Amino acid sequence: MLMTFIILIVIFSINSAAAEEISLTEVLERGLNNNLEIREEKNKIASLERELKTIRAQQGWQVEVSANYNELVDEGNRKDSEGALSDTNNIRISSGGNTSLNINRRFDSGLSISQEAVYNDQEESDYGVIISYPLFKGVPTESERSYYQKEQELLKAKNSLNSLIEDKISSWVENHLQLLRLEQSRENAELQYQIAKKTLSEKEELYQKQQISESEFNNSKAEILDAENNYLELKNQYQNLLKSFKLELDLSKDVEIKIEHSKYLEQLKNELHTYKNYNQEELARAVLKSDYGLQSALINLTLQEKQLEWFQNEGRADINLSGSYNYSTERSVVGVTFSYDLFDGGQREYNEKNLKENLKLAQSNLEKLKENKIIALERQLNTVDSAENSKKSAELKLENAKRQFDLAQAQAESGLISPKNLKQQQLVFEQSKNNYQQTVDKLYIAELDLTMMFKNNFKEIYYEVLNDDQKN
Image (cartoon, rainbow, N blue to C red):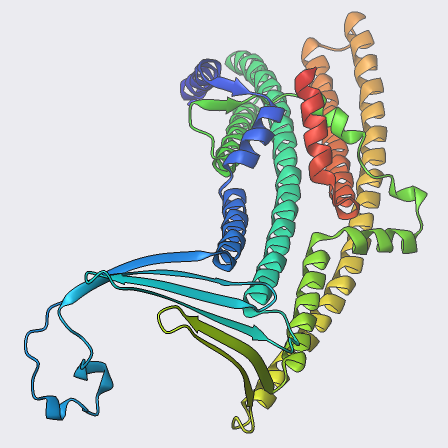
């Protein structure tokens, strides 16, 4: 068992030394580029941007060239040429081919222009144009409405990405700090193991001389087993957290994360929000103004209002001015088309009701989100206060452990206590340091999460700090 334990330590040390190591700033940079969830959000944004460009492309000039050839096989009986099926009686079709060019465009104003030029193998040509324009346009064109809706979806997608990035930065920083504390705990566990190992050796010698009981000797053996299990448990926690962390960052197996205190964390700390300078009402306003989820809910509410407005302004009447011209006949036509929806079976009423219900739901969703954000703010403020109190408590315990360790060092130098007792006191002191640092880390993460609630430009702050760190 002991030999296995030693071999595991050696193997772990060799693997760590052989692997490529990257710093925390590189970890965050790669994570933002490689993380699957972030890539999916970026892909959604890119897809919406392409859809917007597609809509704009559809609003431009459209040019199509087509050609066909027909071979008249049988003219049939001319008396029967006036058949009921006009699509197949083909009385005007003869053998030959023709080529046509179609050019059309729909403008934002609703103006539509369609042009066609035809040339056949008999060297005959013709040209025609049809123009249509709505005289009373109560709402934007269908294309413009579609573009507006896609724009709102794009804004919501960007909010979702920014919110996700902030969550990931906080989570990855916390994971790095947890790994750092687990590493320190593992070092303490190794120190505890060395003390238990030395104690067992001393107890074994006393037991051989029959100066202690078998029960006391067995207690020492149990202590070294506990120390070994504690070390292995911490090692497994460290490795499991590291694996999940690397999986989240999409790092290859041959890349290791350099677990050390990063200067970047100190630089980032300067940007953390000092909430005590503000009262509760000011904090609430800042959160409601900055939250990405609330911004998206407001975008959705505005969209629902727009859709209802368009529907109500669209009305039942439709008046269009139209015109056409044919080159071969030199025929020009101008006209006005009027239509009115007298009865649609109640469709319009049902559609308007659906739009109004969607608007109510969007309003309710926005108000509910506001309430939840205020509750989340209060919860986060309590978390920060609790973390500060835990830090103060751990600091007092650390000071006490430091005094006890200093006293033990003086006693050891005077021969009043054994080196083993000094090691035990050192272990208590190291554990107190680790406990204190854990409370510092928890306060750091709590303040970081609080800052992200107030600053919706935190992503830019992160990149600014990251660039400064890389320059230095």
